[in-house]
Image (cartoon, rainbow, N blue to C red; front, side, top):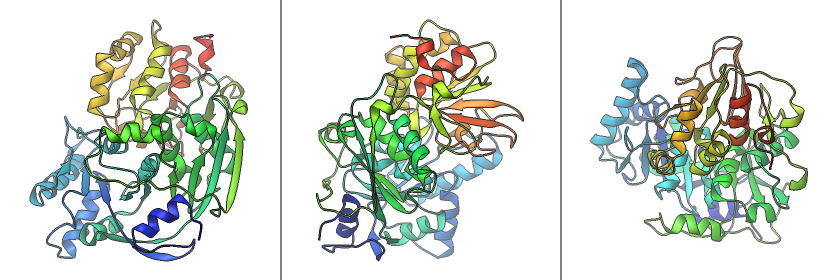
Length: 422
């Protein structure tokens, strides 16, 4: 029976030849992930069950990235729970301050998530790793606890939806714009509990960072997972990082898709998602005159080195508007170091930016950029729900790093061409 890449990965993890959409399965997990918001709950449940050891100390990954460095006593206690558990169970992959990063940028960088893997994480943006050809999805903390004990989890096999992009990208358009455009077309429930499979000539030419951005935000369309079949671009990224074997899967030509959407990239310009939903996406030229108070460049969606380079290209030789608080957050220590070596941090500092150690802080309204009532932020993050970045009466707009950088200079949401014309 012809199968999609998602169906093939799930079948392999229950040691069957085939699975069908709607089928309930119990599958073997390759990687399980928890952070400082979700892991302490899972650890409590793990101990309530009386479990003595984790399913695999090399395959459980703990990353305190949301409120670390700790912003207060409560967050310090959350991280201590993780730290003590990691030491007790000799967890191989526990990433503390100085070695940590935003989890969904860190794990691929460390070679921990690989093609063909089945990955679960107690964080909704775990779907990021589909960019490598893995099945990865977010779960709740109690599900994580069960996986920590058994190494298995149950799923209902999702239907698949194919999103095809054809043609070269327009200037200043990246994977962030493709996914915002897609969500704008199909809405936030358009792929509910489906596998969102991205393909087409545009995807074939897309760099790995843009692929991460696209799969990262599949959840914003309601998807169970986002996924891109591995190709040479994937393998170039993976081969230099992988420390274990992996398997390449691709969809069969006659695989069934519940829906197929085809988009021409010549019609896609840099996008901005207006509050309060990612589906409120429109070309930046059509947004209108919207003054802003804060710009955040970073997160698990757009804190990678190519994102920082794009922002630096716009900011070089320019200053952030006097009314703008510009915050730049490299997603990992390695990215921070590379940005420093390339001179990007100097560009940001000279533009008037505050540069943070890796953290998810402002994305979820935790710290390092919380908004007051009436304030507006443009961010390269992934969600713009009411109160997402602070006060319920604040507003969050989403964009790619180039739009964010240009807007930091002008003090209002702006197209990069207003700063660089070519």
